[in-house]
Image (cartoon, rainbow, N blue to C red; front, side, top):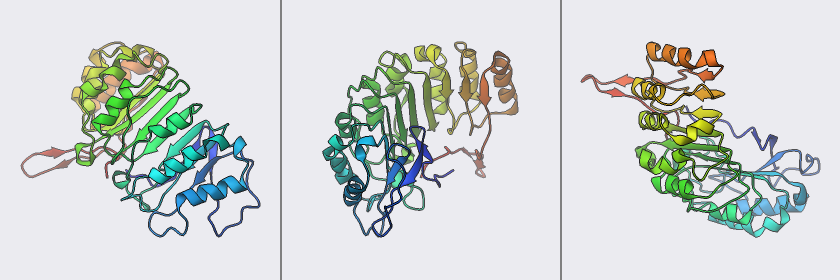
Length: 319
């Protein structure tokens, strides 16, 4: 699977792309009716991203804007969005109503996810203390030093490889309002070097008292993550547990079933898996009678086998 579509919505608002420099801006939606996508061009930008933001601020009543989507910036495959972040932080006083921000809504035709250069993104959270939702796409160069943010309810990191340092920074952060945590852990080939030990503060739930939706997925270590979930204290308070998109096999699924009860969940998402039909049926029989919505769609999870018998399995989103 690759990311072929831009975000369709953010903060429950439909995404709307702000017109380019040669397009008309006299028939725009109401400022608070959409999630505004501001974009440049990865390869042949006629307008740098900060300039696009300046045009946006001149054309739209930014005091009413509730959601912003940062699209492509020039040279995203080789240049981190430092000037993008600086421009947003410099304009923070113009966005008193902003509650959602996504950095890097870039699809494969523009730049593969593993090629997107990132940087320390925490200045955006510091600059916008009223954000309720924050998301980032791309893990190369990504940094997230531990912080405290009392308003954040949803945090998403979409990567083909999430650095262990970032996982540890998120795990050490104080996020008392967080309801939804979504981490695409990825593979070592693309910088995803986190281990289960790095996730331990998340699994304990100590700093996440309100967490209800936990997604630790798109991972080569999905079996180890599932095994850790079998006894993770945070699971008891979850409504949704998402271990999808990764290399989950019978080993991980069996360990998960042998652990603490999961029948309190509203949903268990295991789509894109490598389970046998017997394990799929065991999962269904254990949870569906209790009303748990179980997603066992195999999706496009295919195996390759070498002549020597070596089996290769892949996460849903890598490069």
